[in-house]
Length: 238
Image 1 (cartoon, rainbow, N blue to C red):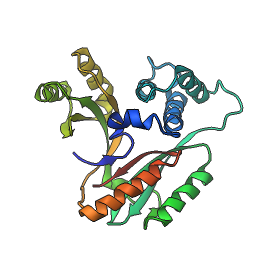
Image 2: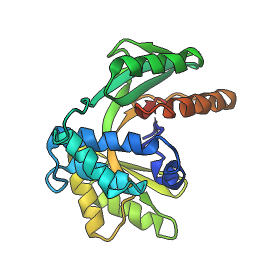
Image 3: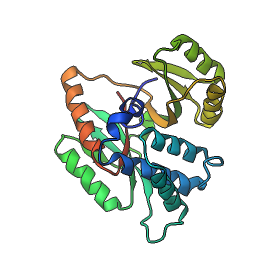
């Protein structure tokens, strides 16, 4: 399996440097808020929130910030704008299909900011459901295999129920059925395998290739998108 999640897919490698950026706490706080809004404020009872809190801790977000984000999601904080999750579809240069997941309290602002970046990068937003059929929603678990037996960890993931695996540098990516993500993650942790992060992502059903020059331009484009506070994750069909 392949695909690109600009935030989720590489956050385990970027945690330290991302924590220095002005917008990383904003991004992660919104993930926590959305999870609490959807399933309640108890991480023990809300697996999605548990993953979000783990992500917040990975970028060294203070406990007070995490608690405040949870309370915003559960409605305990008054006079706070409602955070919503929106997925935008786009077509970039080189016919790259993209899904852009945003968390926003102002859709008009979000769409305006996205259009501004797209206009400068020869890309365009397309109507909803134009490109979604090119992707599949799966669970993914990231495990750092540096200084560990990568083959043994990969085998453990497969035995736990992973439907596929791949490596990005020394990071094992174990893909799961979305319904099995929690069970497989828990099984790996019970075996003493430390999970860097886990969550639901979109992968392309028919990946495409681009040349090196286009790849460089595309990575620069992704960086511009990631600078937007509202953008949470970007998936593509590369």
